[in-house]
Length: 450
Image (cartoon, rainbow, N blue to C red; front, side):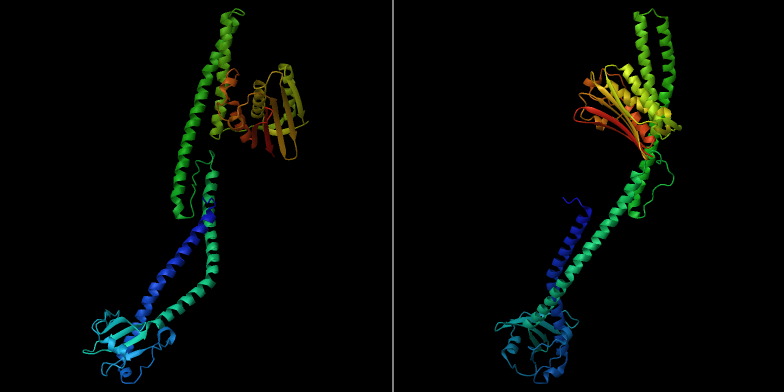
């Protein structure tokens, strides 16, 4: 199957050209023969109407067919004289199959073909009962005119065909490019559509009427998507907001229960477990609220100048204290300052570090890297790992994805951290990627161009 649309159009038009040439060559032979035969009949009729040709000894060659072409074999048979040759005597036989002539004088004249001595004669006779005036022409002369016509046709075609093929390729390339350009414009309209411009009042309009129905369908789909996004985002935001208040109250009761319970008693342990689960639910609702605002395009930034070097150095120092079994290394550039939302970027960095710690190996390692050039800021957290899911780089940013259950079921988490980081990176104009090398080393890298 041909994948190139332009090549497909060119080949289709070339095929049509070949079919046209074939049909023209085949049918033109039949049509041209009928045309020439009718033309010869018409001129012979005009000669028969001229009585002078039958009062002279020879028929005057006065045909004008094909630029005054003269028929040298023109033979006359007069009704007023005795037949001079065998051909004229043949015309008087009753066995000849006569046909009507395609002429207003069809009732006065008749036409036939007669073979005599290996020669086919083209005969027109005028009804003058009991005998007829007739004119006959050797059909080979008519065929010679046809052969000359075919030679002219083939000569012209051989000279014109290359130009026709070139023009055909040129036209087909232009048409296909024009069609692709229209499709690309529609593609650009669709690709530039996101949650922020779904409800634009100035809806897209096609410059061609044939594509307007498609644009109308797209505009209608855009409005329905906007309504669905608004409904889903409103539900997530309202649900998260409504859940946070009772969860906060429950956390307060759980903390009070911990204080009022006997130290290390079963009741205190149950209150502690309850408080941890409530805290986990509050964390989920907070993340869902941020994601809902991001989906709705309402996640606003509060930019300020943030010292990323201090954040990374403090995080590396805390990692050495909290995780003495892990080897901590760093390559942190000094005085890296960036104007961003401090709270959101701090959450992004902490989530990446938290994943590097939770999904590490026994006696593993974590490496912190931070660098800044004139137009690029890059921060990266690498860690050792094992049993990494094959689809991790592709699905890590899907919401509630936590890898293989057998490997992650004992690890605390909600599966929202990386998806939240992705949204934070996106709203800051950056890009967040996750990669795994052959040694099961996981790299989470955030980069942004200034």
